[in-house]
Image 1: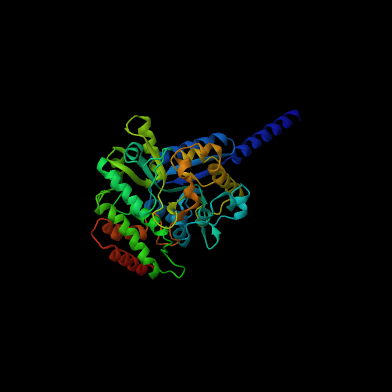
Image 2: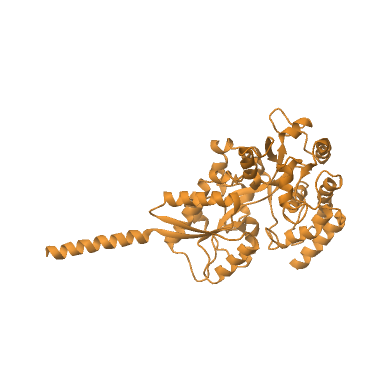
Length: 426
């Protein structure tokens, strides 16, 4: 009898051990994050796994950024082979929903882990929705900002006592500032002037500062009363190149190099280049003091293009998540947002308001200085034709960039862009 009891007890212990092992959930994770973003995200995943060693393990995979990533998600979800959670640009949400690649996320489930609308900037939270339904949770706000060489601005009388630029708001004032900076630099301002990325982001910012409508509620691209505003935005950018303030036909990497080498006094680019500047400065390879601020207000009011890295759940065909898996995924999304101060180190603005308003973030520079743009950020049009690596980006490369470089008249560029996008939409 004693032997029987001993065997029974050992069997119970073994079963408990097996149950405990099975209780640990594995969360399959996909992202598209390379460079400094990738390094920081891998560090966050390692921290998460260490803190949840007995309950949840993230198994992360990094795939190629852009179209390859989104194509992979769509095809994998269609056959039930997608991950449990993934990073996703908010600008791609409409296409992801239309293609059936994204699962709706229940607001009650999000609320259970402290993720509610009041914890995010309104425009950011709503950019994760389609028809009022939630399909993602924002993780950051990344936008374009103005990088500046403090030494060159001081020489031109454009640096305030607080070390920040002065006299840059308004098209005329900005042009006057570029004229003052021109003698001391090869270029007054560097930015990508070929292709689609920065040209779209700058155009969309200037356009929205005039309350331009890129896509109306009835599906019309660039309605007639917004065309003059679009033309004015392109004319402003084209003037920088025509006057020699900015380089013509310049690729992204070269635009960065012009600033970091000291050849340009100003640089317009995304917040994601903050680590580049920080790292070069730390190595003593920058050669000047730098700073970064929100993009100037050229027209009627502040507005800056923005997108967000977010977390989404693929709509894996025939593979509904178990309650345990769903709980683990929600914990991953919640933990990442609540620990996003480390992600801000990559230049991003935390989407989660409690982190963005924390004392720790308020002392993080230059992020804290330009973080006010979270309240005036304008996200891409809510269209399946818009977003990263989309037909809208293609149209920018085909029409706006040539106009910026003097190869097309701005009016003609906007009219052709409108016709192209409308043809694809109809």
